[in-house]
View 1 (tube, helix red, strand yellow):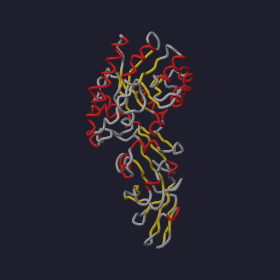
View 2 (cartoon, one colour):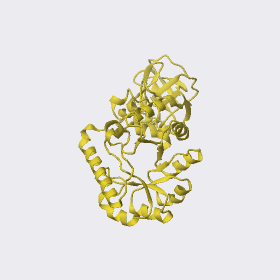
View 3 (spheres, one colour):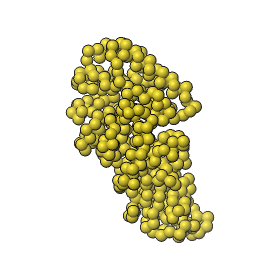
View 4 (spheres, one colour):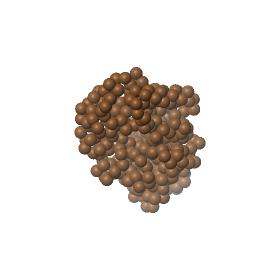
Length: 362
């Protein structure tokens, strides 16, 4: 493949392999919800979603209503859960046949004023302490919803399912969710469908798969645990090129605020990608290196908005040569994140939409 500039390559082959590995952790009766929020975790949400729909998944999830509308307008037919709806979204949610996650009485009361039959998911807080009703809200929920509304699923969200040190915390969350579900079913006199597990939950607590599981980061090749690396394949790779090479003399500086001052004569390559594209300024000043001609070139000075600089003094390279920033062999998004004490999620979702995306089947 010839690289003429910065671009992201998305491997459908790896995406499919990840999906089937996740499916292998649950039985054939368990529905699979694929999370494609945040521009498909930095990939390409429409093409990714169409591919997943053709490969037998059951549901999509997005964070906000505009993300769901984009999928509907692209022809996606599967159910779509909106995880964080606001009151002003309800007309569009109904119009585009999206399913809201209802998490508070303010949101619930506003929603049932719009529709008493449109399906929704009811979220309970079991310890993450973000969105959700508490177990003490069940009686009030019954008073409001008895005989109206359409609760399609009960759900909650695990806060540390990837962390072995937090096993007790996770098990307490699961136990509380089971208690909430039992009380809801006893109060309402019906059996509710449920979903709880995220990617790490699927990999570590698959016993509690219930009726559906949700996978986001796992689809894109990350399992929050090194032991899953051999089973999950990063879907996204990021490459650029060398725009120009400068010969820098001892004492000369490179970049804004003279972030680098040469101690000896050296060669510096200019790469057309910067912090506006998602390459954090924290990665500058030698914090990380990228691959050129099978050698690692360290960053030089401060990362600029649209450019970064690499030390290529000991690398035989030329203008136009390929630079590998993220791939599935040398340096994954997880590896890059570890350099600056962050996670693969932040690295992937920070990648700008202005970077060209290319879909491949390899």
